Length: 478
Ligand SMILES: Nc1ncnc2c1ncn2[C@@H]1O[C@H](COP(=O)(O)OP(=O)(O)OP(=O)(O)O)[C@@H](O)[C@H]1O
Ligand SMILES: [Mg+2]
Image 1 (cartoon, rainbow, N blue to C red):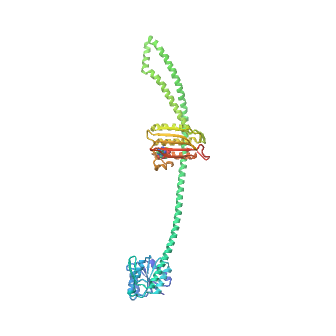
Image 2: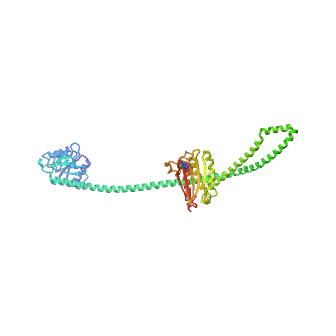
Image 3: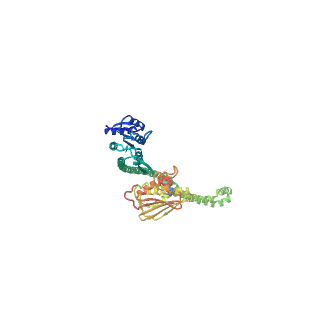
């Protein structure tokens, strides 16, 4: 049974190599370093040595040199084990007198093959100094003592290494490709799930805004109904009474002029009666009071009429009675909607102008369209500084009608532009904006089969254009 000494400092690797050799019928002795190895060589006989290159203390090459310099042991063949294939190490090993090389990662059969070949061939006879071969590799000179057979063996071994590495490389390339494929697939799945998560989120936000829109409309409708009911009755008295007051004032004026005619004869007979009347008339500036009374009545009548108009606009805006598609005159709806915004416009000192072109009747949910117009106009007013202008225009387009709201306000910065239709997106301070106006408007316009687009106007300012078909598609819903 051939005896082998394995010089290896790593216990795991020593055990691994020992196991391979024992399985193949070798008697194995382990030594953790070169010093121990050499001591064991002096104590007992070994047929072959398998030594690691990197060892604590003397390296595998030192062991080779020491072995080949020793006349007793120089004929024991020695195989150097390395972790990586490095031609410089091979040449250094040959120079040191190694008889064979093998890399640790090689399959057991190849490690065994290498040990057996070296064992069979034995050591090269000690070469004469003239038989030394000089080799230059990567600018380093090496002087080799190895014989032809030994060199061929190392060549074959190196070739086996290359084949092995190549096979490993191919396997890793296949594994890499597979891992890459899986990664790409996973990436795709991830992208899909992110996309569907994003859509679900958008959908949730839209559903939420739809709900809020309905609630807003319902409460606005109830408010409008309440206001209309509560204001209309007393307003009717006020308007009626103004008419009566006007009539009665006429009576009183007529009466007063009759009195005045009677005053001249009375002044002759009873001046003490006339004097305080004249004094009082002068004190209250009777001609002015009488004239002003008429004016006051006129202005009160105008105010009352305006209140009646606003209440009507409010009802018109909410169009509570119209929950179905119907033909509507958009310009009328816009005019009544603008009445609701006029107060805010004058408060902000922004001019509200209209350029309403003749329009055909449009089939729509009128209250919803009014809501869109109010939303766009409110935004435009909010964006303007005092002295600014908001222009609401309508015109006929090729396949429908257009409503455009243009302002001379701050404009919309490019990084905000992509978000303004997102539900709950607002740049307004808390309590001032919910960020729902445009997203609800977008939903309403889309439900009519129309489009809503935003453009920047120069210098600064914004133009929002709503295009509506004359008749929405049959799927349109409120
Ligand atoms: N005409 C405009 N000029 C400048 N910015 C605008 C204009 N219209 C909309 N925006 C921007 O778009 C944002 C979103 O508008 P949106 O009407 O949806 O919400 P909001 O006005 O902030 O709040 P809400 O309408 O719910 O009271 C606004 O906060 C504002 O930044
Ligand atoms: Mg708004």
